[in-house]
Image 1 (cartoon, helix red, strand yellow):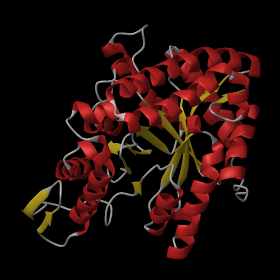
Image 2 (image 1 turned 180 degrees about the vertical axis):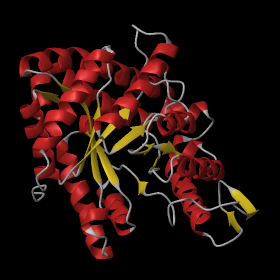
Image 3 (image 1 turned 45 degrees about the vertical axis):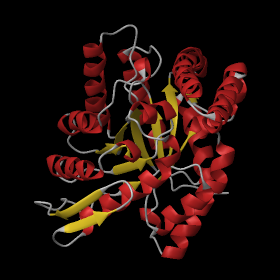
Image 4 (image 1 turned 90 degrees about the vertical axis):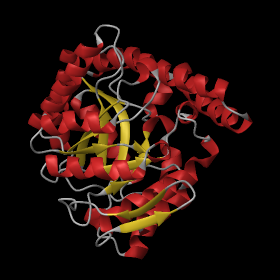
Length: 359
């Protein structure tokens, strides 16, 4: 079992943008000192308080220069609105800057209004993603100059000045909610991930199909990372954790809801249908936080309680990388620090035993 930290770098009313960004760097240093395996960053655009992280290279440079041992990477680079060749150059620099600690997460994006802000038709995002991924992997694995002529991007006689430090390239992760896609990613040896707010039920099938793809491709068990991202809070007692989590998770949820409403207003009928479904899931969480807690839409409690919750995730879903977002809502940095210290000091050791077999 491995452990990761994730951050939206959401704005906080209690801090200036500079103070919030300094807090982000401090959380990176703390995570590295405490022994986390990974630190993952996000990418969002024109989202107000939801995220102060529009540039993966900027965020990841902060991580690289404020850590010494843990691996790190984007979760994810939004390929449909990115210039793939620019992504290749940036990932190359980060891999060398960090001494080969980079992981690469790629995705289509979950917020349609971000695509339209860049003039991208949301309904082309899958094709753009697949073409962008093909370009990135071709650039890393080509022996000498390469060319690519696709529907969205065309490159002629590109000669990268150096190769990644990691051979043939840093590990690739692609979160997905689709079983058929998960199966293909398993066959290709990519890592995979899921999001707690969506619910465990969907991921039983998604992760099972991923493992089937890995089995067919002969991917070794130690190269099948299955991560699960959840807001996380550890306190000395269950009662204290519940009070903090219910308050601050609802504040975080409100930012998610605002983003979905913006996409709903700007989208066509298909986008409005999808965002309505997402808003419905969030409304259900808001209406019954106790049921959401039982369904592990977030993780919270004393160290023993949180360890039991994560044990449920690896037992039911086969999760082997738990990704916690510890700084959310208006939590102070001291509250975030205490949560991290309890997690790595008392939760992680309880999960040191080999993972249980996935159901």
